[in-house]
Amino acid sequence: TKQKLWGGRFTGKTDPLMHEFNQSLRYDQRMHAADVAGSIAYSKGLARVGILTADEQKKIEEGLRAVDKEWEQGTFKIQADDEDIHTANERRLTELIGPLGGKLHTGRSRNDQVATDMRLWLLGEVRNVEKGLKDLIRVMVERADKEKDVLMPGYTHLQRGQPIRWSHLLLSHAFSFRADLERLQQLIPRISVLPLGSGALAGNPFAVDREFLAKELGFESVTENSLYGVSDRDFIVEFMMWGSLTMTHLSRMAEDFIIYSTAEFGFITLSDAYSTGSSMMPQKKNPDSLELLRGKSGRVFGNMAGFLMTYKGLPSTYNKDLQEDKEPLFDAVDTISACLPIAEGVIATLEVHADKMRAALTMDVLATDLADYLVRKGIPFRETHHVSGRAVALAEARKCQLNDLTLEDLRGLHEKFDEDVRAVFDFEASVERRQAIGGPSRKMVDRQIAVLRSAIAS
Ligand code: ARG
Image (cartoon, rainbow, N blue to C red; front, top):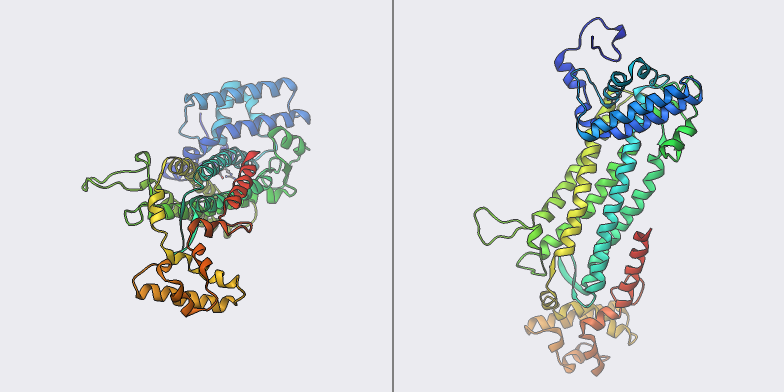
């Protein structure tokens, strides 16, 4: 007769709706490999303290591997009473190897088990996400390296500001992702703390060697307090906070490219591979890939905010509310994992219209350079800013470009203007003048590329 793992003290049956409400197997089965790995390590730990003989441990390990194989091959048969991945795996283990399976859970609770599984599973996912992030940065860097000659206006307030290199803009986003990469890597030691051996809350009574368990499972350290071990979900919050910020960066980059892909800007064209059409308007090519990158950022933030709300009111140790950590985390991981390669593909395949970018470079974006020209002749910037502003106003009044003003016109504004002022009206020269670290000059763009390449090298 089937009964719940914890059924001993119960006489009544679980309401079917309650069972459905309570079960997490529908979504936590994706942690089957982590659960089995944790159990195998734990069985070894039990053998080391004499709770299992070497032979028993071997049988349990073999049984667990068989269970995992069933999950892998899609043959695992979920039973009506299975509650979560932990009970399902133990139930199946016992079916396969008999009552010996019942020894595995000695001194262990699902409380330390689930916290271990979540951390182990997330560590694996973080490795994938890290790779996705590096791949994205790599594509951006390669593109920036190839397209250094392309100049465009840089914007503030979405108004033309100063000339920059297209590569400089691309790399600006890549630096956000590099910071995300660093932050992700910094999360790892805090995820990689092993709770196994904390028991339900009060620790392990069989002196299981937790440092051994950590080593077996590849954890960097062990939790130092059993109540904390079963209670802590900060690593989940932190990952989702990380994800919210990373998605924010994807969203902001997407927003730039959505704007640049409009006919009004015409700076870039998204490849067909990452665009969609309109069911009604035949001419449309919509940047759905970018819009989804922007849109999905809200969802990751929502996962983070939602779980944090659940988490904040809980008393110490395990409470079932903590089961609500899974769906938001899984969704955050899935969303980010889906977004990174899309962003990579969009950037790898978009077409850059250097001519359109060049055409948007009107002479007024050199007004700062014009002011700087007088600065180099010893005039205080506050004054030269004003003089250059008047030159802009004069050109505007004449409906001409800034460089159409004659030397007399300029001399009328300031006596220090000379023939060499002509050299100011050159976009490439303006960009090249910016030789300080972080500038858009070729040399500084090369430097950025080198910094980013080394960040993704390891
Ligand atoms: N499915 C549960 C979870 O995800 C496992 C832990 C259950 N522990 C308990 N004491 N009921 O949190």
